[in-house]
Length: 289
Image 1 (tube, helix red, strand yellow):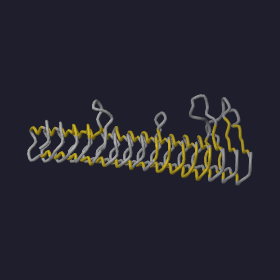
Image 2: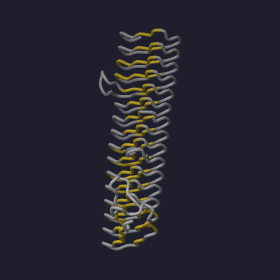
Image 3: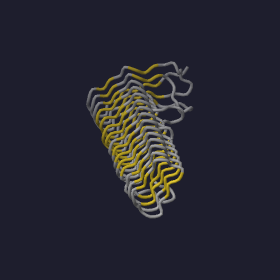
Image 4: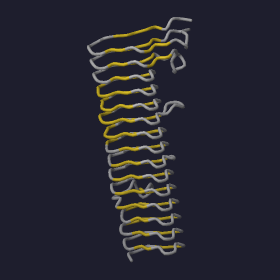
C-alpha cells in the first residue's frame, strides 16, 4: 500500500502505508506509515512511523514515531547498532552503539561504542564512547569516554575524559553547568557551575561555583565558591599527593596545596577539614627538594 514504496531481497516483510519507503536485504521487517523511511540490511526490524528516518546495519532494532529528522541528508535513525530503539521525539541518532535507547526529547545522540546506554527526554543530550551510561531530562549535557556514568536533570553539564583519564562510574544530579572530568567514582548531586577535576572518589553535595581539583577522596558538602585543589606543576598533572580533604559548608573557603618548582612529588597534603564560616584558608607549600 501507499506510493513509491519498495521491498527488495527481504522475505516476509511488509510496508503498510505512506510514501517513498524502502526495505532492502531485511527479512522479517516492517514499515508502518510516514515518509521516506528506510530499513537496510537489518533483519527483524521495524519503523512504525516518522519522516526521513532509517535503520541501517542494525538487526532487531525498532523506531516508534520519531517526528522529524536532522535532514534528508543526515536522517534520524539507528546505524550499526543492533538491538537498539528510538521512541518518540525528533531528530535522534544512535550510531555504532548496540542495545541502546533514546526515548522522547529532541536532537539527542548516542554514538561511538556507547553500548547499552540510554537517553530519556531532554534536548541535545550526547553520549559518546561511554558504555552503560544514562541521561535523563535536561539540555546540552555530555557524557564523553566515561563508562557507567549518569547525568540526571541538568543543563550544559559534562562528564568527560581529559588526556587519557576518564570519569567512569560518576554522576551529576541536578543543577546547571557542572563538570566531572578525569575523576572516576565521583559525584556532584546538586549545583551550579561546580567542578570535580582530576579527583577520584570525590563528592559534592549542593552548592554554587565550587571546585575540587587534583584532590582524591575529597568532599564539599554545601556552600558557595568553596575550593579544594592542588596547584599543577609544569607538566599539568601536579606534584605531591593531595587527598582526603573536606569542606562542610560556608563561603569562599579554601583548602589548597601549592606547587613549588623542584618540590618532592612524594610529599603529602591530606586530612584537612573546614567545618563552616567564610574565607577560611588551609594552605601548604610543598618544600623544595
